[in-house]
Length: 159
Image (cartoon, rainbow, N blue to C red; front, side, top):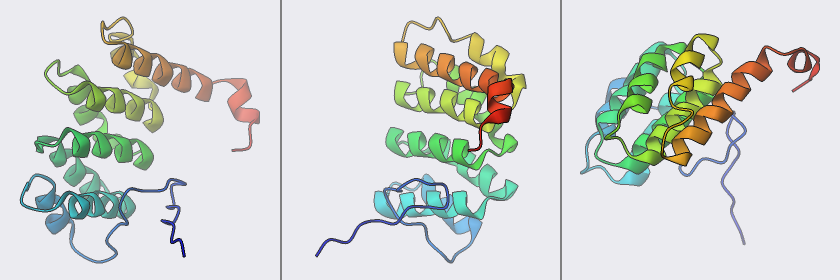
């Protein structure tokens, strides 16, 4: 018999099911604790995302201090899903950090586009010609999404 993971409220199949009980402070503390198994840390990421509050968003942003590029990438992804503008300054910092892993920077760019605040367009434009195509192309996609959301076509689409 096959048991498949469930689709989240965000329409994605998450790599770990979110915890359904706990405290933001506990979930946050695990994000940078390499002694906590990655599966548990991922469960906490999705619990924070599902909480959806500004406090949960700030807790997720603290996870960019983790040593795991995979976890930082997933945090950027869920911040885009949350569409919480509280994350914008952190995502800009991550995108702008030339020492950050390219996978994390790419996801930060896409998250900025997904949040939908047109004010980030000028930041994204700074990286459209970045020598790493993963970053340049992600910024291009994010800008196109921001522009599309302002278009007449977007207003006519029933998503």
